[in-house]
Image (cartoon, rainbow, N blue to C red; front, side):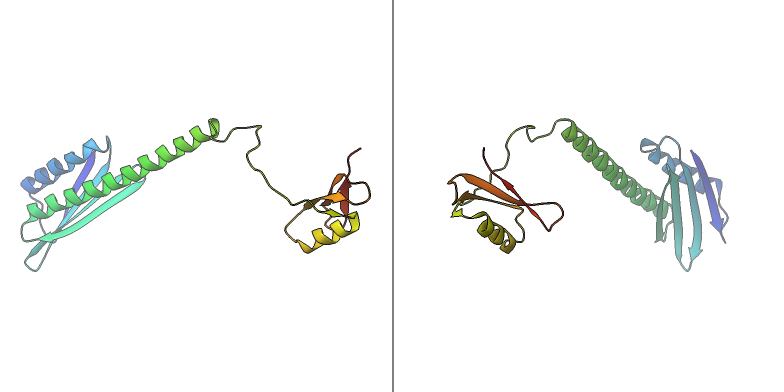
Length: 172
């Protein structure tokens, strides 16, 4: 824990320094090691305390003005504690969600190697040419089952990957 107390246009007394350091020690319950700076100044009849804490790549800042400098420092510590708790809660929530996602990937909720979706088609008797024309009409479909008028068996016509040609599946 590295804490600096700086005064702008104001002399920092030992009492103010000790008080600021004592209050900053409250933040050790969130971080083992951090850098802190307390800057105090006077504007008009208000005493302003600006407190910055840097730890683990994150910077937290609070600025308050009050007639009493000690009250300003107290308020800053409360604000910083709120910011730190909020950030830590977000991080914990993100890591918890990440571990849940990893757990779901390891244990998928959907069964594997099973039929999980069914499609129903009305199979009408038609010639393969009629089936091709019908498949061309339905832009989103890639295949169409039908009863072949020529042999009375179920056939499937499908679009090939080239997008121009068609394939026909016939039973033996």
